[in-house]
Length: 144
Image 1: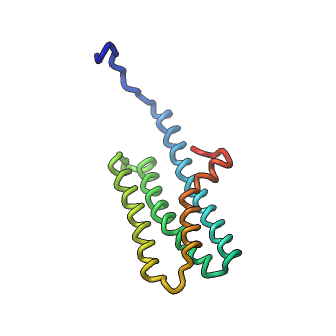
Image 2: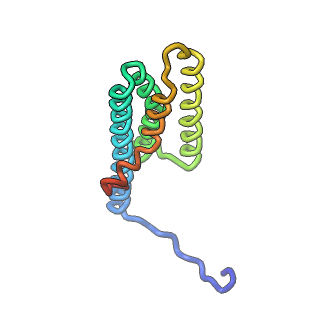
Image 3: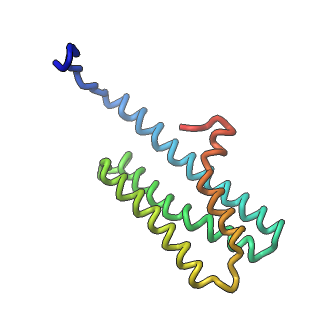
């Protein structure tokens, strides 16, 4: 007892309740990935229509710099939800760090190797669209 508060009993979930929660979590992860992929496609299309092929490739590279590591991290989280290997908070922390670090590494690599062809506004537009993919879920009221 701490300052007059009684200790609470821990919440115990049934297998059915746990399955419902896992299904909703998995569905939310997949919806976020689909929204990010849709936003990447929009970024590539808009860049192509406005500035041509090299801008579209740059937007694709910018979108992929974040989408690919994010998709791999989402796959790891889904394996933790539905697979035999369970995730813990440390898995999430390291996954986020690896995801962000690899996105930065791809952008550094593009800056180093793509000096002649990269269209930076389009690349940043593609990256921003994927980063803000959840806005699409907000617009259609499909947030998990």
